[in-house]
Length: 192
Image (cartoon, rainbow, N blue to C red; front, side):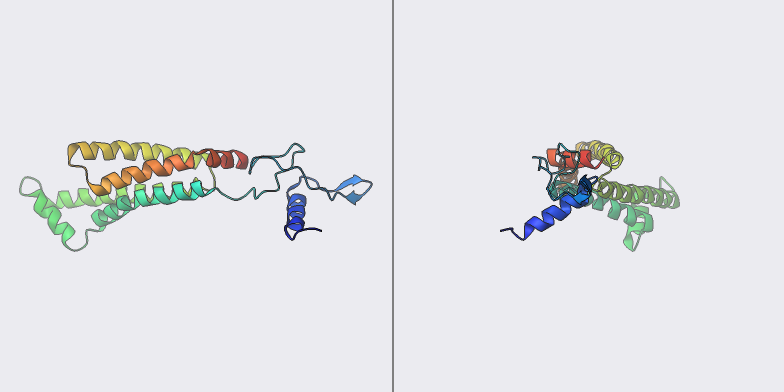
């Protein structure tokens, strides 16, 4: 007696096998390839395992979500500085005082805000590209996390540690670690 899942495994094995065709004088092979221990590795005959080879591990999804959450404060801060809605511009003028031209400070804040916004959006894009998986995107997001960690640590040394900065730091590090855990690494290696 066969279980309902056996035909799916057989069909999946036939779809994934490089050539499930003629072995015995034109008859298609009904044998299912051997299953390996790895979820993503190839079996001894060169075909893929019957497990869901395309399923991304939860660690990769978690890593992308953590990295996105770490980048959101940068995106929002950049947007606020670039657009300067409401009292943001007035507050910047007040901070500038009389020593520096207020218009220069506002222009510099807009440029800095635009740069922060673009970097934050790129950070999010590369975090989600790393889930596809793309090794180059994972490397780029790792470099961006290293830069973010250095800047956040510097900001916390110069001023008092802020809960938002600490949260960003922890989320960025945790997200990057999740992208390099063994199951994530195995999935990326398989997809190459």
